[in-house]
Each structure stands twice: as C-alpha cells, then as structure tokens.
Length: 469
Image 1 (cartoon, rainbow, N blue to C red):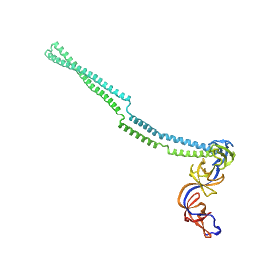
Image 2: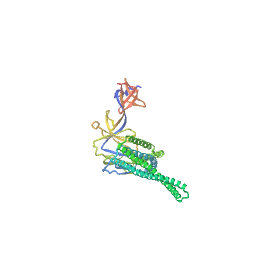
Image 3: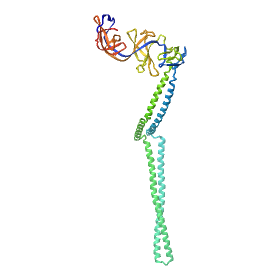
Image 4: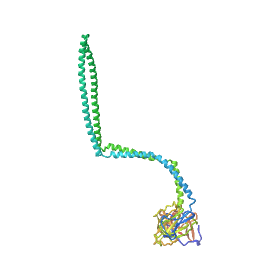
C-alpha cells in the first residue's frame, strides 16, 4: 500500500534481536512523597470529619466517615444470623466430638501405662514386694505348724477311740457268750446289756474321731497348699519387679498406644459438624464479612503518623472514589522526596511489596528501575493503589509528571523486537517502511508486548528499518 512521498517520516527504528520483557503496564503520576491525599474508595455522603486541621494524627486514627445508616441494619441482621448459625453448628460439632474425647482419654491412659512399663521398679515397691515374700514364708511356716498340730491331736484321739472300740468289741463278745450260757442270771444279763451300750458308744466315738482326723488331715494339705500359693505369688511379684522394665510389656504397651492413636485419628476424621449447618455457617460468615467490609470502607483511616495540612471536603458533601478529602504531611519523609502513584489497580493484579518494576517517563526513551514500597487497598475489595520509589538522582521528575510503570511477567530472549512507538495498529498490527519515494505498509504478527519493546514474530527481518510513529 504505497503512500505519497509527502507522508515520509523522519524518525526510524531498526529491527533488532534481543530481550523482550512481558509486563503489566500502568500509568501513574509523580507525587511528593511527603504529602498524601486521602480518598474514600466508595461513593457517599460525608457524615463526620474528625481530622484536626494543622493538628497531628496517629496511624489508624479515623479521620473521616461516610454515612452508613443504610448498612447498620444489614450489619445487625448479618451478625444475628451468623451467631445463630454458629451456635447451631457448634452444638452439632460438640455431639460429634464426644467419641474424640473418649478416644483421647483412652490414648492418655495408654500413654500412662507405657510410661509406667518403661520405668524400673521403685525402691518402695521392691521393699514392699520383699516384705510380702517374707510374710508369706512366715505364714506358710505358721500354717504348717498349726495344721500339723491339729492333725496330730486328731490322730491321737482317733487311735484312742480305735483302742476303745476294740476293747468294747471284746467285752461285748465275752458278755454275749456269758449271757447265752446263763440267760436266767441277772448278772449275765446286766453285763450283756452294759457291754452292748458301751460298744455302741465306742463305735460312735470312733466314727467321730475318724471324721475329725480325716478333716484335720485334709485341712493340713489345703491350708499348706494355700499358704504355699501365697508364697509363690509373692515371689513372682518380686521377680517381675526385679526384671522391670520388661521388654515384652513395653512392646505391648507401645502397641496399645499406637492403636489408641489410630482410634483418636479415626474419631477426629469423623468428628465433623452437620454439613448442612456448616454450609449455613459459611454463608452467614461470608455475608457478615461482606457487610463488615462495606462498613469499614466508610471510614477513612490515617495510614501513618503525621500532620493534617488540608481538609478539602465538608460534612454533608457527596463524594466519589478518588476525590481528595484530607491531605496529610508525613514528617518522616523528606520534602524533596518523590514517588509514583498508581491508582485504580484491580485487586486481582499481582503486585507485591518490594517488587521491582520498570519506569518509563513521558519525555524519556530510557527505562529506569523502581520498587513497590506501599500498597493501599480498598477495604471493600475493589481497586487499590500502589506507590513506587525510584532513584531520584537518575530520574528528574516533578509532581504532576506522568510515568509508565511495567511489572515483569515473563521474559523472551534472542527474539526480534522494535520499540513500542514503531508499531501501529488499526485493528491489525503493522509498520511503515520507506520504499523509494513512497511509504509502504507491512502487516506484522507480534508476540510479547513489553513496556517499551514489542516482539516481532513474522513480517520483518533483523536489520530492517521502519518509520517511527
């Protein structure tokens, strides 16, 4: 598309190969760092101005407020809804947490048992165990003596009864023979009946003494066995204490602790409140946060300790976001200090404190480094402002001058590029080149767009000359 010779441009640029940095580009203004205009981030009517003109203020002081009459009922309702939702959810969570508490108590008991299993026996326990063994030995000896004496006594009585029974049997036999031979003799009859009675009584005495002896004999065995068992038990207890800590018991206690911990973890994983109540609580919390944020945005807070040098707005005035309300002086900053203010930046834009940026002034083709030093956000979650510091010995700028600030996103190396001012666009990117006496348009494809450079993908070759805008 040739153009008349009269359209020939005097400035030109050469297609070069090098580095192009992709960046977010913002337009800003040079401001005096010492002075700062405070603005609301929401429209509204000024309800109060608390800033003392020519007076000092502290960071966080409420300097002015917008009327929030329309928001207070919403805040009260949102708080009430949130309180009810939280109480309901907490009740469901308390019920769900009962198994957790039980599992935690079991775990604590298992840990106590493990700690005890890992300890050697105390001197007090060893002393008590040894005393128990000695007492059991003494009891066994006493039992043996007492039981043996009782058995021996019963044995003597039994033998006496046995002799008496044999004697009675002998007498009864003799009396029976005599009675059969002399039935008419009163003496023989009396002897017979007396011998029969004596035999009966001797038999009974023998039976009783036999039972008493058998009982004493069996009692001796049982009592001695019981006393011996007490000795064995006491000795086993002492041996166990002497062997502490028992590796087997420690391992067993460790397994018990591990199982108890698993039970706690499982209980905790199941200890959730009612999902429906959780959703209600989340919704109520979000609603409360939203309205609280809106209320907070109606207050203008001091960003630093300083002095109020001007109050621009008046109580009752309708203001818009960005309208100056109060001007502060920061005595900690030099009067000659300058910085770049970037306003109305989207909250989603990734700008961080300390971030290095590139600065391009309107009357300069050179790029300079800068650093983000302050971020001032909108409490309502809308736009925010960023402040960029720069080397004032390298950049000569006055309040009110404009500046372009770029934040690096990515970097392309060894690519073709042209200055941004050499690339034109009418819905399609193109450049102009000198073609003899005419100017020729060449459509191009561009890639990364940096703050001062544009990547050329197609349409031009390295070393070509294009006309400036």
